[in-house]
Length: 116
Length: 112
Image 1 (tube, chains in turn purple, cyan):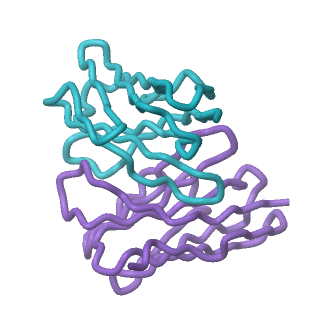
Image 2 (tube, rainbow over the protein chains, first blue to last red; image 1 turned 90 degrees about the horizontal axis):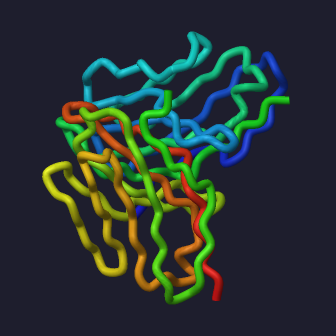
């Protein structure tokens, strides 16, 4: 079956430009997460969507970061006015759990973002 | 402040021997712990988990041990195989939350 897919796999951009990263979760999964992994670091939580509830944006590092999830499926993470410190691998995950935490999250392959 | 710590960035073991990967945490509210395995250019894949009400969970060659009083967990791989070579992330979650808190990972190399 199809897993979580992300596009593009690699993105190189110039400082100050906006970028959009896309995530297609596993069909039927209601929960969707964005993480990022900077060089030498663990995965850092960014944002979480669950069904039609308001997203948990508590991990977004600045107001240059935003994400949306249309129709409860595909999600787009947007970074405006990119900075060099935004360079990282951005990972999307989905889960079938509806509440209560402690779920197995299925990860996509990630988008490697490089800001020059 | 890192809530989940993997103090060994790398570990090298011989094929057939035991691999022990360690993880410490500081948040006593964490009640579920997971290990993920990551190959280069791929996303992490779930390996094994343990609830805080248990102290051991076993799945084939993989066993996770939890010592709540020490806020420590470990992943044992026996016997280790070259295909186990990957980065292993420890993660923790607090009841009622959906946020996984990850350690920085340990790169395991299993030598043939």
